[in-house]
Length: 292
Image 1 (cartoon, rainbow, N blue to C red):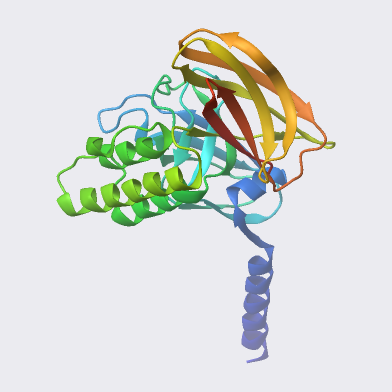
Image 2: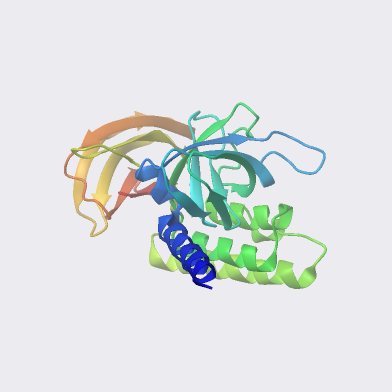
């Protein structure tokens, strides 16, 4: 009898230790704490999927700590490709992963393209885990996840907000889901126009954090309606000018691009900043930068 009680207590005690040894957090947090090593890559075209939406991203995770880990990757989390010519992606379906100490596992995750005019990912395209989408784009991916539209219908809805395509491109066999997505993006586009200047295109950029500040880099594209002078500046969310990259630089009409790379110790963690292209007497494009 005493032996049975001892065995039962030992089992309960062991279960308690196991529970305490399990650490639950987001994959993003685990990467920042250096508890795991991850590698995100494109899967390329398959018989079941395209390479830029659906189950189009492969994920390799290795638990490099001595704890059991329960990890989640959130719908709306950004994936930034290390190659500028390849589309950045957005995870579109929340998933959970359980890893024992020092265990490695491979997964396939759902994602959408957020840069329609860049090249589609291939098996050699490598991505870094980035910040969360915000505002209407975040709300859209939550709606897509609820509706189960991990297909071209959902992709077209995403492109309405990220690439300014027409909502009429949203099509599909389920008319009720198509209508819900169209109604939402039309509301989002109309609301965005009221909030900021008409004609302003929006994009997102994510910084790299160092011990002493933040660095940002990327390529910004905009369309010049006619030949004019252009200024590129960074403002904080209260519209105060922080940095001038260049001012009154001549550009011809047509599609233009500029690669930026800068480091600044004055960027404040958690704050939103705007990289703004101004010319032809108006704002031509803005890139929202969240310091996180």
